[in-house]
Length: 160
Image 1 (cartoon, rainbow, N blue to C red):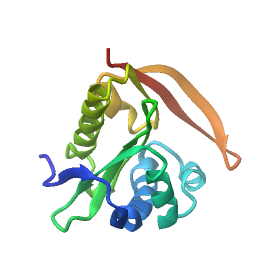
Image 2: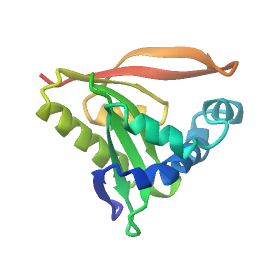
Image 3: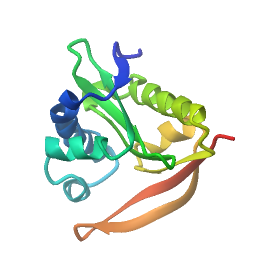
Image 4: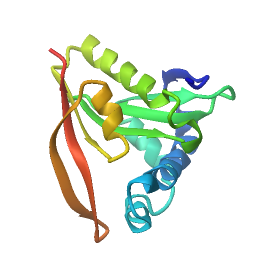
């Protein structure tokens, strides 16, 4: 069943809920594929709202999925060069098509802008969502965050 959410452009008043959402997604969903130590290294604390505000003001497009109370329950951002940097969904809304709807919005905007391709570094959990939308793995990336080994997948989707 698809969640009753509205996809809309980010607003500055979304920053506090997005800051917490990032942490909740990593610790609530990320733990399905990553250890507690990996989740803690990835997101040791919720982001600060100012960090969200600064990211959203750097030229990227950010879209949120808003619930009936108009609160962000998922978000995605697209950098001008085609990099999908964040795609996070609150655990209560996972598996309901919300991330797919956000990704479809980004793909549509990228096509409208004439971008030749999109690329992302997807987590183990996000990888299937991106694959369903035409992204292909180009490499597994093994690295350390705060001294903890972790991995993700470099993925790409051609648009032209």
